[in-house]
Image 1: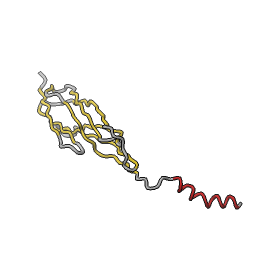
Image 2: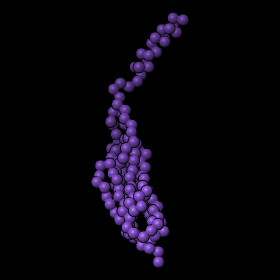
Image 3: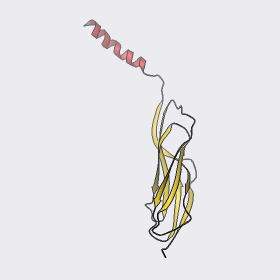
Length: 135
């Protein structure tokens, strides 16, 4: 009985001595940069227009990059990306994390469509797509 009691008293000290001291852990999801995006200059209404986009993060603490295209506005489309940052003691590998994708955009009417890339640390970049009516 004394051995069990003694073991229970020592258990918190043993566990606390096994955990790392002064470790700083940080994990969050945030915007990352759009490195580039490419759209054609012209298309016809109803065409499927490929929109290429590439996101980047500055170091290996970033992972799970995801690109999004928000075309909820009639003639303005926003492209942005998010990623997960996770580090212990702010130590990150020195690599450039990239992710790319091709979105499919189908304009439903003729006119000028504005595409904007929204980045964490870069200025927004605008480009236009001129959509012509079907002949």
